[in-house]
Length: 230
Image (cartoon, rainbow, N blue to C red; front, side, top):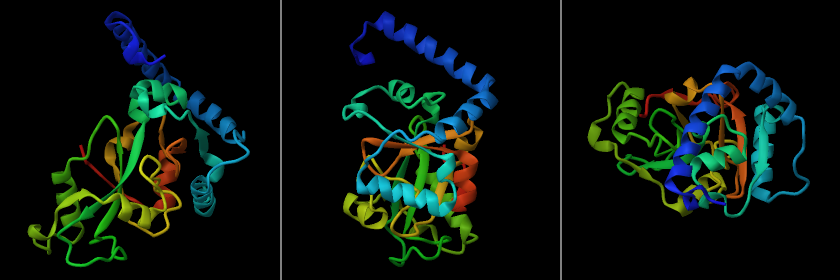
């Protein structure tokens, strides 16, 4: 049953329960991470799409596979409310639900991604509950070059789905910063680093698969940028 199909009274009761559960998870963060490590040792699937295997291999190459959870979900998963999806993957709260998107600087003076300080494309990781503030993103990226490049050469928007697929190997709903085909510079929203427990859930290469990963492991293994994007 979808939460949206419930009465307003029942929906409100669920929202109150959600807040109480989130507070409880924060209070028992250490216990959650102990259970996390145990869950990572369990194999939940025997077969998966090639794009999920790509994520799995990427995590292995980064040395973080044993700290990750790769979770298959239902085909109607994205019809559910965000909190319901969080419950499904055992996330501590809906704030722990994140997404990866490829953003393009349409005014970049080149097509290259080899210079992380002035790349045409960035893979940006943000919470579903906090959309990217593109002005803050622009200011941060200009700062990477000490603002030597004029503001007129910066303008960020979602990359075309075909371009995103070419760069990452992942289709919409499954974009993942782990195992991308090309080494796109990664920017992670600073708010994610303040989550307790310090884990997030992302797409895992396919719309019906999710990746759970400790925030510190993701940052250290990818050497991503971290900045305020709220």
